Image 1: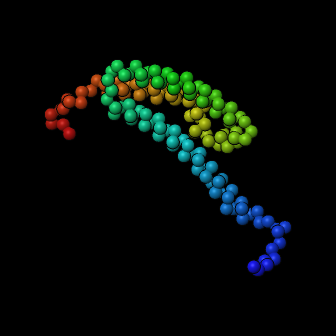
Image 2: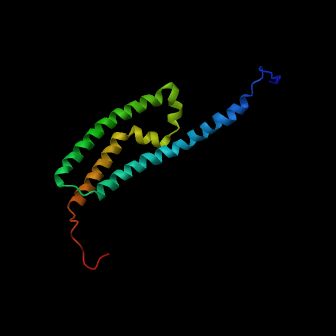
Image 3: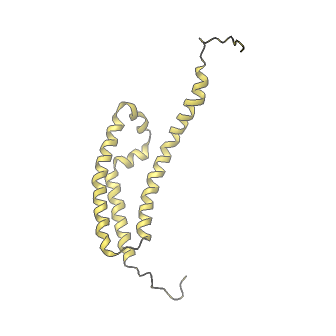
Length: 138
């Protein structure tokens, strides 16, 4: 075995910072707009799903029940998110997520809006007959 005369008192911290902390910082900056897109896409997909699923009219009651439970649950989520935003370890990071924080802090309102729009789309879709075909149409 060869003896490598290494001086262990010198530590290159800049190499670790460049290779570890800089990519994490860049990822956190990207996460601000990725989180908003994820939340908005989920809301849009709920509306789209309510429009394209044909359900029995009796099952609309379950949609209303699920929306009411989601509104109550979203109040707790919004309150816990506000607590996290004001806490020391995560507060600075979460306050940089402007659009996502706005959506999550107003989550009960957004859940109610999406629930009502989804209900309207569900009622419109429940009245359509899949066997009905228009002559001369596409």
